[in-house]
Structure formats: structure tokens, C-alpha cells
Amino acid sequence: MKLDSRLSSVLHLLLHMAHSERPMTSEALAACLQGSSAVVVRRTLAGLREAGFVSSEKGHGGGWVLACNLQTVSLRDVYDAVGAPTVFAIGHRSDNPECLVEQAVNQALSGALQDAQALLVQRLGSVTLADLAADFNHRFEAHPHAREHHAHHPRKHHGPA
Image (cartoon, rainbow, N blue to C red; front, side, top):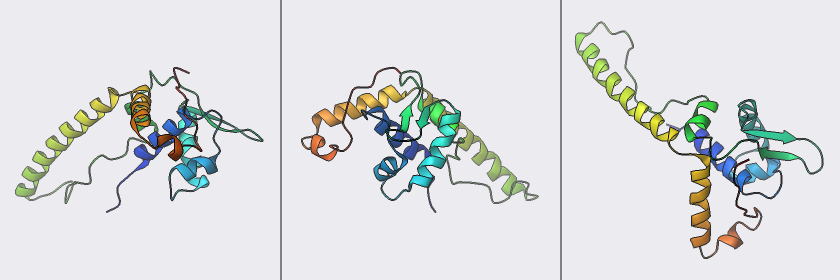
């Protein structure tokens, strides 16, 4: 089963944009997501543009930039903007079973899955994009070859927008 990596991919793109000195083209962002394409990046970021998290300009020197305050946008906000993807692959065999055993199984699974999803969404709400950027900054400073690895994406501290 293929996992839904939209949230992870979008967060990856947002952090690259946060640490870029200039607008990033769809092609450059696709290169950050090895195996992705500029078309997929444009389609993905279009939804974030509607949510006010990014903006784009066409033409020479154009590209995608952050349009939000990293300190006020949570991972929950981004999760919602990408369509609140299903968290678990676990589901019911039948949504309206006649079998009393299956009804009991569905009841137990539903409660546990709802509780787990609520906990995850709550946790996403407690982490901001600024928290992610700070974690990246810490890792970047501690990594012996970080400057060589990210030479094509100049690092800068990106405070509130």
C-alpha cells in the first residue's frame, strides 16, 4: 500500500522556501523532492496559495515564496490545507454490517481510530513552521558537510513574514 506523503512533501517544500534567498521555481522545488515533477509541485502549491501560505510570480526572477508567518502557521494548518489526508490505512470491512460481531469490532476500532487521529491532529497544532525551521537550523549547524550538501539552497534565518 502506498502511503500518503502529501503533508511531508509540502512541509519539505515550505522549509526549502523558508531557507532560500530568492523565489524558487517549480523545477527547483521538484528537484528538492527527488522523483517529483514541476507539474506536481505547481498543483500542490496551488492549494497552499489559496490558503495564503505561499505566493508565486511569473517571469524572470519569479517563482514560489512564503507568504505567511512561520511562527503562526502550525503543521495542523498545513495538514488542513492539503485536504486533511486520512491518517490510518485501517478501516472497516463493512460500514453497516448486519453481523453483531462485526458491529462490535467496528465500534471498538472506530473509537480507537478517532482517539488516535484526534491526538495526532492536536500534536500537529502544537508545532509551527518556525519550530521546523529551527530544528533544520540546528541540524544544519551541527552537520559537518551541510554547507556542501545545501550549496544550491543558500541558508538564511527566516523569521516572521
